[in-house]
Image 1 (cartoon, helix red, strand yellow):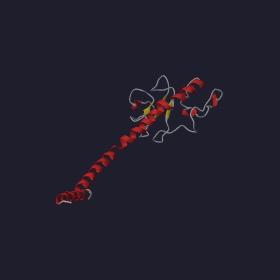
Image 2 (cartoon, one colour; image 1 turned 30 degrees about the vertical axis):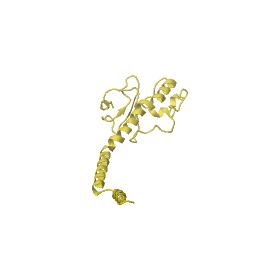
Image 3 (spheres, rainbow, N blue to C red; image 1 turned 180 degrees about the horizontal axis):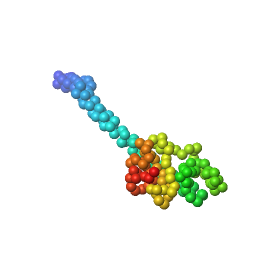
Image 4 (tube, rainbow, N blue to C red; image 1 turned 135 degrees about the vertical axis):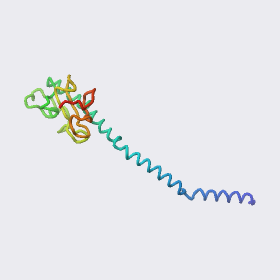
Length: 163
């Protein structure tokens, strides 16, 4: 081996050893700072990320999931359940209509609760849907008639809901 070759191979080994020592303090601090910013961003947006999915779930239930059971009930019974009978009429036969009732129209023993663990509200004839029924969730605040109510009506703010 010539001196020149030995020098070259030694410098290559030193350079390789120097690269394998790890990260510098500055690189570690920079990575920790970036991770901290990402965590802070995620924490501040967690309500928006998960809150909207709960609202979407409630919206789908009142606009889609109950539509077929209520239409089937109407086909068999001649009309939608009354406000007094409520959504429970989809599960158990109203006493005076047992001869026409072909349910249950929803599986399970109870009407599911909304994402905030409150009962869905039902009214027939509808006030917001004048040609049908109103079904709504009281929304995240659990209060009826507030801006966060989620209903099967298509236009107008939910805060206009009639009690």
